[in-house]
Image (cartoon, rainbow, N blue to C red; front, side, top):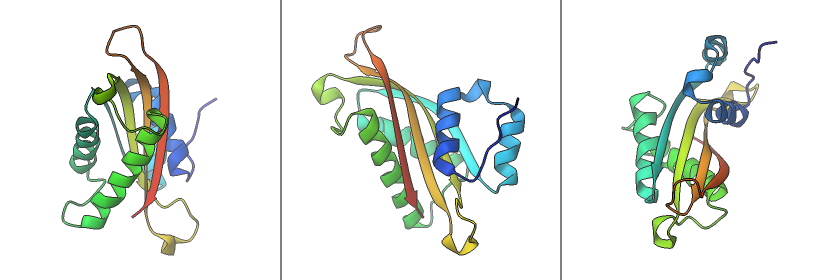
Length: 150
């Protein structure tokens, strides 16, 4: 049985983040493209929130998910990242200042989740990984999802 993508950008972003870059079936990625969705995946980890944001934003730009000359696209991505970080950090977007560190898989998906093309594109950011004290083996799993309109 093969898993196929649908038009839910958040669900697709979560699948990509949970599965990891090396384990996604090629047919799934082709299905996303057939649906007109753009995506990127990566890994990031730090005790600094700004490094997490920068890694996701850089990957999104390099993979042409957002246009750098249009501020609203960067702005939409930023808010989706912040919303996803709320889930990972349980509402307290702090890491190093409270001696926490994260190691995350991330996925960003851009597309129109509606049947009506006039609704335009939305962007979803999914984060999955670990959070905890900066001591290897003492962290626990965490997950976050942020979705914003462009």
